[in-house]
Length: 460
Image (tube, rainbow, N blue to C red; front, top):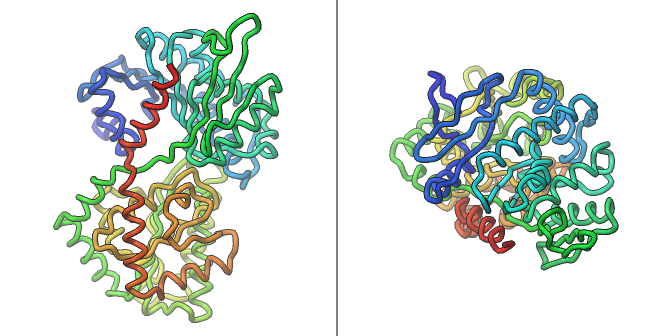
């Protein structure tokens, strides 16, 4: 990514931190968009890794990225909470950009290369690469949920998306239901595919070539769909939580809030899938009936700006800001807001300080591929304290079973979960957190990447 002064620096995301050392050690390269429109620098090397920028024009950003990717696929893959738009010109831009990525990869990849494609923005790339470079070993990982047939069937270009994904040797999903949905839809759309359940978390999908072998790499081949729940850099959060300046920042934060008995925290991108509004309404309801005392409890909500050009996201921001004003107007005292709202991203050190200060972490998305905030909170709690309230519809719920799990669509259940977390006694809090930390520690982001690449190599 470009920094404010125009220089280059690794993105702060956990995926980048996990893969850069592997690319450096293996002599691999990274191809991707710079994040700025009409930005087309020449390939360059950063920290020992070759980078190949792929440009997007303003119209492609609008139609491919904000349009088809985030106004069609994103809502569709998240249970169609907002009506997805299906516009032919946006689909055309999606195809064109996917083709540009595929051609770049084909041009720079050495013979018998391993190519790993990421996320819903690039679902056509695997089959495009396979047609051009049948020698390549192709992996694809979907970071978001994959929908069931009754939702996916709405997509006018459903056959093309499935065909694109079937170009990969290995397609990875966050949860078993994603792999299952993909396998079922692939067979629904093409009865000639042979789909077999490989194990509890995987499927093999064989596409035969007329007059050829089932594993002919020029079209007919075996695609494996597997489950690879992503994680975080556990050591990074654990070490940050131990730093004196971070612990002091957490203590200072608590003091600045008036030393409340309970701090509740939410950290999310400002997205309609994250359930921020439902969470705030539950908090308001608990204040209204006296279950929570505004003199004892404070809530902090960090909302990172995202996709501000998309109408659904602007509407969500306005609704959240309206709720913040309403709750503070009714329940705050002068100088002591009951709900603190930050509409901006925070450096990782400040996030960890917030995690240390928070007694209750609220992670209540309506639908989420994984949600790494839940794991970050757990990894930061070296004191083995704090309570995680976690949506059943986040992928993290499969692993973090000792959280207070909740259906966020159920208003009463969400109220009860928050109240349970606030009133939970210390022995139960520490017992639950110890188990959560053990679950997170068993798999970090490097282990996730190594496992995926190991499974992909096995496809040779």
